[in-house]
Image (cartoon, rainbow, N blue to C red):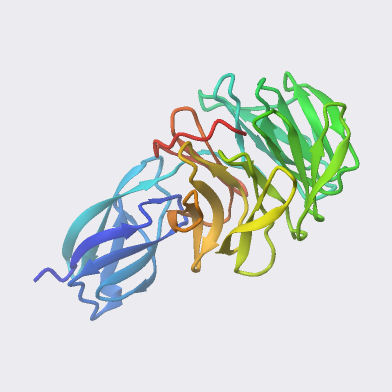
Amino acid sequence: MNKAGKILSISPPNAIPGGEVLIECEGLELDDLNSFSCYFNRKKARIVGASSNRVLAIVPENNGMQIVDVHFENFGEVSNSEKILVGKRLAGDLHLVSNPAVDPKDGSIVVTRSGARGQELPVTLLRLGTDGQLSDFGANVMNPTGIAFDDHGKLFVTNRADGEVCQINRDEEIVPIATELGVATGIAFDREGVMFIGDRSGNIFRLSALGSADTWAVLEPSVSAYHMAFGRDGRLYVTAPGLCSFDSVYRIDEDGLDEIFFKGLGRPQGLAFDGEGNLYVAACKDGRHGIVRISPDGSRSELILSGMSIVGLCFTRQGDMIVATGDSIFTLPLEITGNLLH
């Protein structure tokens, strides 16, 4: 019998480098761990734990290869291989604290170098073109956090240092839209184009057509940021990461009344909907970090992508998932159509 065993499955089926995956197997003989190795396209992976029927491995850097073959080697014998989809790094040397955003006009991706609160950096907003080139904005917003485009393709950014939301024109001009918003972090538009801003101190503001911000809902404060997205049902979904491992996703109706939509995530952060109403959240579930997919009714959840330090995500028009960590963004061709609501 082959001492390298047989690989049965890999969970989750998608990852970014550094993510932890569970490899189910059978017949693996582990008499001597020094003889055992796990490879991702011939790159040796770090083993977290192993037994005769399961192996926990860390996905290594993949040099741009996305469909990766995984196999075991043990006592000179080689197992079968199974495939996993690994994200391709598009850009690094960033500082993201929430979702990136796809420009509806040209498909480019807007990202940040946010910095610590109050820290002034020479460049804080950047645009990754479809050609893979990263360019700086002329506009320089201190501590940019939430990023969103409205239905007309206008870009809006929250500034958590000064508690304001700004419109960015032609990547050069900064126009403050509303101020005195506390620690302004999350931003989202409803189907009518009304802007909502999340102050991590506990308030969700609704911005009127005249530019005045009224408190619309009140939630528990967050230690980092509010992350927000509207669902197909017209309700606002919010994560407010805290310090426990059993945080909630909140759902707020049109009257500003909140309820718990889903509970049981560790430090949930950026979130986005697909066209079928499934919610994707950057979080930890059952001790495993990555992207969690939650069914439209909140009754089912699963980890669909593994990765560490993920802060947000978004979808392109082509169905790719863009995954943001604290310092990089990755792309995976998952063929998921995003919700057209922002």
